[in-house]
Length: 466
Image (cartoon, rainbow, N blue to C red; front, side, top):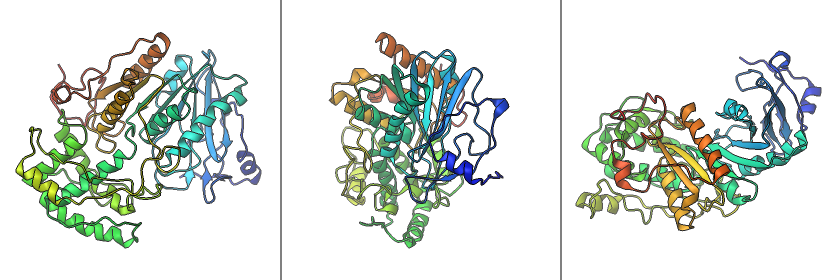
């Protein structure tokens, strides 16, 4: 258990922007979280300390700057042989708690080894607040200049999961600020992610003939229990049991086929990924349900707890369980019976609600995604690729498929290779290789994802790469 010091002087000090140079030998004790100066009810964790109580210290030869600015904690680290370039890292979704904290990027050591400085923010809020993530991440560039006395001559934006959306929105909102971007496991399809959560649940209900609803306004807490009762009727008909690997019925297999097509199409390792995600339990407070069922947008009336209304829509979605040219009778029957939902809010063109990702980058974007990820599915890459092509920007987007099952399940080698190829692209103008993610035959091939997968992903079950 972490014991927090509650000295008033330190609390006041931490409420202001700080400059700190740390070393392992001079690590200070963790101080208590301080009240946010911008978000009532929020507290900000000491940026000189990790959540587990471990002090944050500079790596050998580097200098760190930490503090709190605008209600957000920040960390900046600059190597001794700084090359004049900066990486801004955006973290992913952290639930709806009221304590914010900053942490280190996955490639911290590699950035420093290659001469890059890095900066990261806690953001001033939690929840699915992409707009706040964009504002606080962009502010790091000015903060870096203020604290180090030198403005970076080039900035790369990067982030994982929700931070991938922060990355995609940031480079479109501030196109002149960035030289390139590396989202990974990112929500590159903005509200399409929540459409997918809708799709998975309404098709499960339709296939099992369980009548469900979609509240038009945020429902009372009792709705969670009503949803649990409905899910309890759905699961046996699918062959899904909470916390245990599913033994799919014929109906469950059809549902699996539908979800596969809604998440990127037929591809290697999907059956194992489907089992993995249906064995996993969902996020609190629905952590007594299989993963996808705890994400039903009807639980929040489709607001994602930040949008001004329902952002999900499936009125014109054609659900398929096969790849035949024409839908089968069973597919027509599913589409006739599935609950249809109409959106009342859209992705926001600015930084409110759920910001829109246009897919119109002005700088090179190299992205990675696990093909077995069913939290933020692989289809996010395809949506972004189509949008980029529609804007005539296909040449500025490279996507790499990784044979992993978990969310953001990447090895250091995969991330390092991608970053080095992105920086080479920025430096030379030579576009690196990627996967043809919009070609169904390529995606369905047994070797899909082999080219850029480095290392072991134990949960991924498919024939080995040649």
